[in-house]
Image (cartoon, rainbow, N blue to C red; front, side):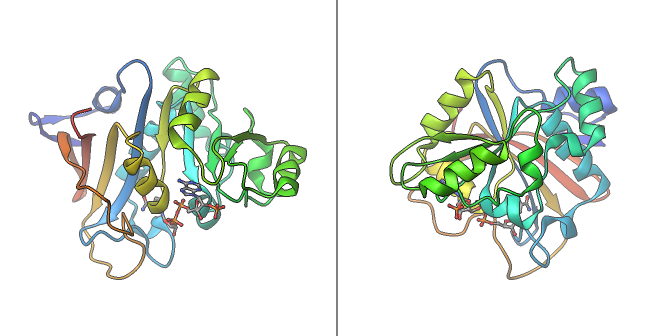
Length: 242
Ligand SMILES: NC(=O)c1ccc[n+]([C@@H]2O[C@H](COP(=O)([O-])OP(=O)(O)OC[C@H]3O[C@@H](n4cnc5c(N)ncnc54)[C@H](OP(=O)(O)O)[C@@H]3O)[C@@H](O)[C@H]2O)c1
């Protein structure tokens, strides 16, 4: 991996860790891959945009996190399972002095996760963050299946409250893997500290964009670094002076 900014350098594995290491304390980063025209999927999944370098960054951002946050739509579309499904992430976590696995935290207004999902076998337990409005039977089915259910908010998920509840459990450093709806609400709620964007050298058209509906206000980002491998660009942006 080559670093282009802030200064030209070749990055080995340790250099890549330092390039992405989060500051201490509570921190929310969002990791996405998009084509040059802003598409985040090819045929409904992000896989069609990925490269070996992107996989390395994806794994590293999981390895550097206390918890992995994701929207229910992405968990379903991408077939999410526990982080322990990927032994390479566990090895990186241990090498970084962390526990081998991190919980997946799924945000779902309706508590719509299937209780039979592989996520129910997560260790640490998968957490579903939902709200009072979610069907009580669905919530108890998730608890019965082995997930923790956190109710944060009444008619909708209160993301600042959800992140505070995660921090109380020791999950302060959060990597959010989307998707677009969750990114939009997290930006609107002002809880995103960083966007880590892999920019694939591809044009896709149509499909799921990075953000669907317009934001109420333009969110300004500060470029912290720009890396490159095989034509894929890896940008680390701080969000709005954070
Ligand atoms: N290229 C990439 O890096 C990347 C990353 C992520 C996703 N994607 C793609 O994006 C697509 C999914 O898009 P999406 O916008 O549907 O994904 P999403 O944000 O993961 O999922 C939307 C669903 O998540 C729940 N949700 C999201 N934000 C919420 C909030 N603030 N409060 C309560 N519930 C919330 C809701 O679930 P309920 O309906 O259960 O209430 C909502 O229907 C997939 O095709 C996936 O492959 C691409």
